[in-house]
Image 1 (cartoon, rainbow, N blue to C red):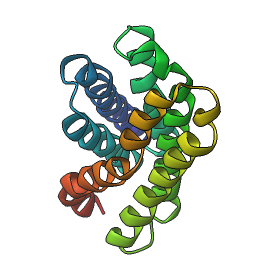
Image 2: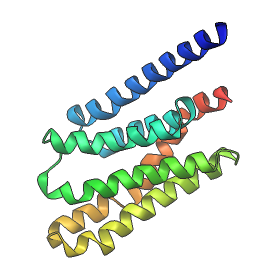
Image 3: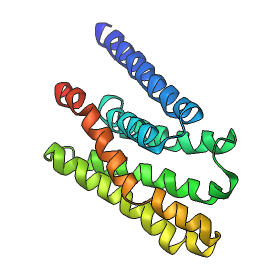
Length: 167
């Protein structure tokens, strides 16, 4: 009976942690429209969620910010075609970060951030270029290029002490 109680308590804690990350991830973009602030914080939530609540929960979390921003009208409508790619980019970050969990943290973070950046950048270059106006594509190319790498790395650096202590 004590084991069941411990399991239920752990699930409650994980649910609470997930709810906090979800609240941060979906509300932050509503109030702050600066990629260099929101990006690292959301990426930090995603990476921390992988460790504290699990990779599947982190995947669900990775879908939410863009979906909520689009549905709430916080994301400009011309960016709507990019939303699925942003979601997949978050999934790439989460999956690679989880898959490399036994590797050196810097390597794990660097590869995860690099692959997220590469996916998003090439999505704009090869896919969105055919659907969107040139002026929008050029803005997206800036937003979805090197800032994606650095905001993911900054998010990973922010949560490193927490992740290190959770092992």
